Image 1 (cartoon, rainbow, N blue to C red):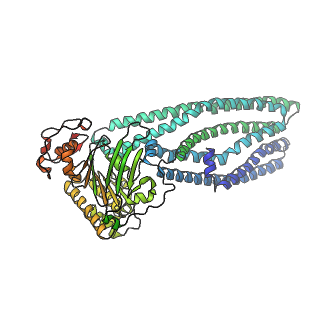
Image 2: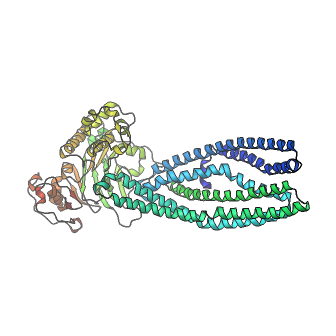
Image 3: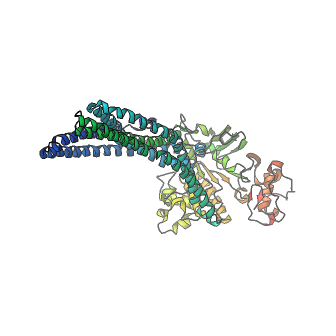
Length: 631
């Protein structure tokens, strides 16, 4: 907590001085109040002097008004400090999250990060506000009341010396058991956030499979677990107030008993006894409030540790020290002297600390203007392979080069401007079509946007919208069909003229005709870029469809993270049994084209499908091969 305060207090330190200073002045008047009341009783009530009562009453009123003014100033200082620092913390946390590579995002998880940036920051803000408003007030009031009471009578002061340690002991016993629960509560909130996010984002799937009752039960169980921890904390915390008030009231009774005796013998006045009771009440109430503050600060400390965990997590992928890369000229590409647009050199990759590689010894290269097709069963490593190109992950060993330069030497902004990526899951943000398309190039003209839409086969349906480019997009693009969302994300990647375009199974929701038209448009755009004197567009197509990759200049067949085959469509039909099997699961043998019929050959053991392809499968042209299974 202290680390966060030190880090984010710049610009707010004056509030931490003005607020407590005003609160101290208020406390000063609170400490004077019992003495004024004592004078009112002794000089006014005891002497039956109405003027003295009125005079001291007006003094009390004036002190209350002045104290209220200082309180309002302190409240404003607390609001400015807590809200300002909370805003800066959220900004820093969000900025750090956006610096994370996929490795860190996988480690923390989206629901946990959302909880940290909302609930945890709220807890810290509350602690800051109460710290400015109350942290000085109650300890100072408790100490001041005790000193003032001891100045009135040392004998009655013994009651303070007995009552205060008793309350402190109760407080320590309770808080020592409460602290571990607070971290558990935040973890349970993470779980609730995860289930809520899954249930709401997948509402259609839940309803389609009639799993509403199951999801409700999951949420109920998570909520029950969180409430059980909260109730356990509440039970422990509920001991504080009753016990402290019991000690306080017993102390007051003792003061009245002993004070009454001293008043009777003339050692104390009635007013001094009442002042002593007031000071006793203020002292013990202050301890109660301090106990409540410690509960708040303990929660904030647990939240601060979770926030610091994110802020201290250094991104595994950075471009520190990398300088801008000089791209080859179009003449070098034409003359064949430029480096390959894309090259994998014995690239290996594993998620986290896993011992086994997800990708193992991948080696291939693609020249500028060519198309690389990547095909294979589910879980074969296709998406992981292409995620290494824009450096969403870093290789464990080997290298990935773009334009002849290792991606680890590229500035990330330049690399991800050169590489346009269309992910498997079409993701759009709330706004307009224009605001979504201009992610890569905020200065793109309408002509450039329409050209990208034409290339992505999305121009026709966008023109039919009443507002065209300014048509609204709901969160996640829910007001568009799956195919429309995919085409819009493809158009977004094309804007800004990337040199490498990655289509990661991004045409899965498109029909075969639109898919073919899209690939023709991408090839035409590459030729246009080259004819205009620019660098031709290099395309990487990840797909389950043979028709999407068969015309590629190079096809990479993936199996269990390794390259099972590499070559053109015709070459792979001759040399790669797995590729042949994928083809025959989607096309008739006579539709393979380019070669004579290839005799069936058994696939290698590691590439064998989990379910044998049925003889009737080749006669069903629209089957997709997934995980070695025909479906």
